[in-house]
Amino acid sequence: MTPLILALLAGAVAGVSLGALGAGGSILTVPALVYLLGFTPAAATTASLVVVVVMSATALVAHARAGNVRWRAGLRFAAAGLLPAAGAGALSARVPAAVLTLLFATVAALAGLHMLRRRTPRGSGIVSGARAVGAGAGLGAVTGFLGVGGGFLAVPALVTVLAVPMSAAVGTSLLVVGANALVALAGRAYTAVHLDLALLLPFLAAAVLGAWDGRRLAAKVPAGTLRRVFGAVLLAVAVAMGATAVL
Image (cartoon, rainbow, N blue to C red; front, top):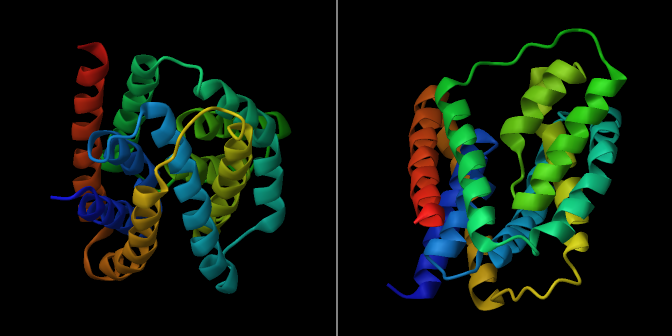
């Protein structure tokens, strides 16, 4: 199978995950770029940020039209994560590949467990400024360092920390994730990381199209079934990446 076909197939799977679940796409992107397309871990996390920015912006438009974005809360949350995202993005390219891979495997495992055990988060009704800043900064650092969107972290944080209604949490998380990813990408602008655009662009195009199919899939398959399938995939990916980093 040629690299171009692999890029199209992997991008479609990542897009379907994001479209069906609102999360998981970028966590599948990095291992696909590393193990299927030959990207280095540093290049894969940078390329993943490009995918996150484009996918978040595309999906945000649809959620905004439906009135499912809380702009003020999202911008406040994103603002807390911008500096950590930029700093972590610049630092990531200087971290040894094995360490970066192991850290990513850990986040993938947490995301997989979250999907397998996911419950609808409940807002506390109390908005704490300190908690909001801390949660926003933490999400920004994770996004910048590992190149993941962090939707599986952003949605519950928005609901429980900023009291955003669940109906608007996914749309608002796209605003937060996209802003963090864009700043993190800018933080990597001066790092010597080569991106193979001949593979990245087809991957990105397939991911955008896959997201539309994912939304249609979500309307036909129970959400719990989808989460369990993608959760199991993420756990398998985490184990494989962790073994690669250690061995």
